[in-house]
Each structure stands twice: as C-alpha cells, then as structure tokens.
Length: 122
Image 1 (cartoon, helix red, strand yellow):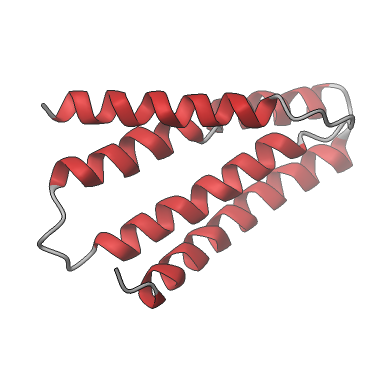
Image 2: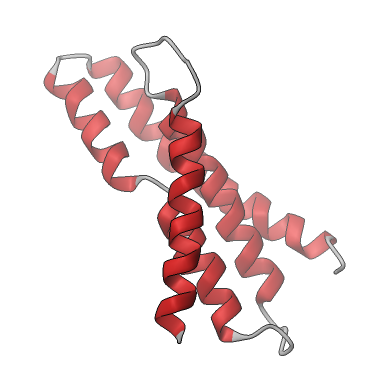
C-alpha cells in the first residue's frame, strides 16, 4: 500500500513540475528549475516540521507528501544536467552562481519550511 501512496504523490509532483516548466521564460539561466527546487525544499521542510511529533498523521501520508510529491516535484537530475551544460559551455560564472544559489537557497528553504510548520496550527 505504501508504494501506491508514493506513486500517487509522485504523479502529482511530476505534473506540478511539468506545469512550472511551461511558464514562458526567456533566459540562459535555468530559473524555473531553481524556483522548483527552492519551492520543493520549502515544501519538504514544512512537511518534516509539520509531521514531526504528531502521532495522528499516518506514515502513508508522510510518504505521499515527502517521498511522492516532493520526490516527483524536485528536479535534482535536471539541475545537475543544467549546471553541467553551463560549465561545459564555459559559462563558469553562471554555472557557479546556479550551483551556489541552488544549494544555499534550498537549504534555507528547508529551514523556512520547518519554521513555517512550527507556526501553522492545524
């Protein structure tokens, strides 16, 4: 049954990621992947913060959101390819900026999500 929850969440996350990729942005910088990864980091931070120390939330619900939705939504493999392509095309400044922003902003996003979960009382 756990696999079904992960699969359903993954489908929703993947569809959301695809929807974001359809936003018409004209830039050489992979801004949509960066935004997707930051949003995913905030979401997973919120989920972890919100579900910790709560016995009334099922493990399948956590799997649905954390492994399914966030796993299907975030785009680490796409990030890696885009970073590689920037560096391979000798766009070292853009590539380095993209890598640093992605890592720093996503770690900060997890912190923000966890703090947000601490204030939300559902």
